[in-house]
Image 1 (cartoon, one colour):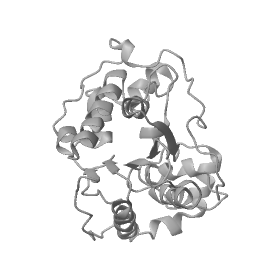
Image 2 (cartoon, one colour; image 1 turned 135 degrees about the vertical axis):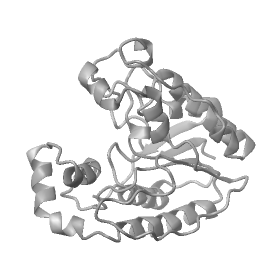
Image 3 (cartoon, rainbow, N blue to C red; image 1 turned 45 degrees about the horizontal axis):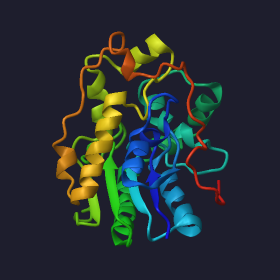
Length: 275
């Protein structure tokens, strides 16, 4: 019998500064489980769904406890081997804000502009796929907890008009879906009235682990533990998270090691991985 905590997610699971312990590692220690991570920073939901397929095919165990952190909505749903997974989060800002990106990213999104801007049904595709993935997770014998990074009511991209939604599985003792206080909201409110750009201007990088300061990593860990302990999302949704951090005054909340992160291969399974 294995004793693993298997985590799926984007940067809210995969950005780890060396001197700030991530919420999921604190949680694994409290649950007395070995953490294993799937996903990378900046990935799309479609990439994480493929990661889940890899897990089911090569590394699945019915005794695993699964934590699913749903990636941010509206990223490029591309899984081609020539498309680096971390480019997915560049799609919306490239077309809507005209930000400057590396030449390779600019070349890709310029070349395929017609393809991406014709994805009016991207919202439909993402919601349909989410329905089947969540239904699959709910059908497993494993205990599963899903945490959202965005509000469940999706904000469509500028060229999308669809409002197609599907009902998701009901909560149970073995399946908890946390929909209130998404991680992205906690991360933004933590800095309010400052922004992540202020952090980059001051430190030159994201000095937070999983986009959270030291205190909120501890609080998210405790909140998720209470969800698991009670089988109810309510403890998380009622939890009070730290807000209003000043990047210049609350220095202990942020990494003191400039730009240094734990290797992205730490806590990762060794298995065959398709592109």
